[in-house]
Length: 233
Length: 230
Image 1 (cartoon, chains in turn green, yellow):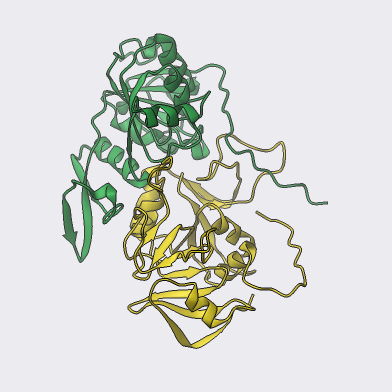
Image 2: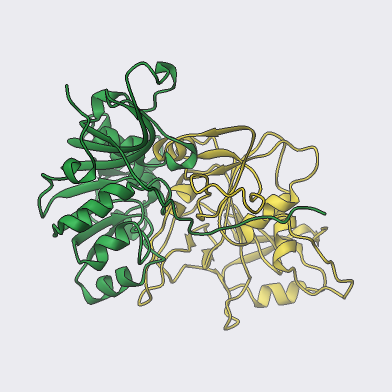
């Protein structure tokens, strides 16, 4: 069971143009920086990306948008990105907007082997268009399908060679769900250790879900909104 | 958060944003788990009454959101749903996005405060999309309004053109249907009832006639209507 790969280039080497990818992260927090850079370098295109956001112009998925590698984005919020806006308005880029909790829960459904779930969000709005509605206990729910993705690419804080993963702070976000939902899951971690180092009580994603793992390099971890308070005098 | 307030002792007409936040903070109860949206709702955190144990939920995966970090202590792995750097407090907990919306959907979050472009007198809300303009997405707003037990909207009573934002029917694409329970504007406090908006409080210097004139939806005045105390 060899899961450890040499780096991002090897981890993504068999991802073809036209693939459906899940990419972890919330804004620029907890995004798989190394794999995104490798995807940009590889230059594959026609990708469908399932990710809560689409990065900013010069970082995150924004880098893939600049090289016109993305055919379709499935996200809950896509502001903060001028090139995204240009491609969307010109019709080059297809965009499916999904409520954030629905996005997370559709990932969860995939992760737990469930074909679909009934969710409240979006009933009575345009999100409900074309979806089956069912009433449970007096409330109307939409039938939302699990995602079908080819590869999930996630970023964790620590991992071991068995593929066990631990996330840090709010960099967890969509990463565990997507890690568990990928047909093939690629995890880049800040620190890769031997089995037995990580306490089994504190594993967020067990290694069974992870197919490839490597220790990433040179994390930039860009901050979108740097907010601070003054030291009180 | 944690702004210094310089309260001017000028005669007040209508509430400013800080005062709207302050009024909403009066709705908090001990033991509440609360999700605050971006804008005026964020300011509510500054006015949590002393002695109340209120826990803030950030839907990107944190319960127990603390204030902004001191300069130099920002951590890119620790942000709120507005992507701002924040801190934890003793007793905080992290979780993934599915659990975050799971706790919202299951009714564990007692109160959601969010802004709106329009609210209808049946509790419909529109706050995510203006057709013809760039659409940025609904984020977590649709999930929050569909599921939270209690939803309070914080907004200006009229738009920049002076048109009412309290309508009989929303004109913009909906975020959720029949979900808003209360609206706090610069002019007053309104419950959503079977008879539409019910004015229960008015801002200092604002008349009931003005409120009625600036409310396009159905409106009644509560017999116990009184001036907002902040």
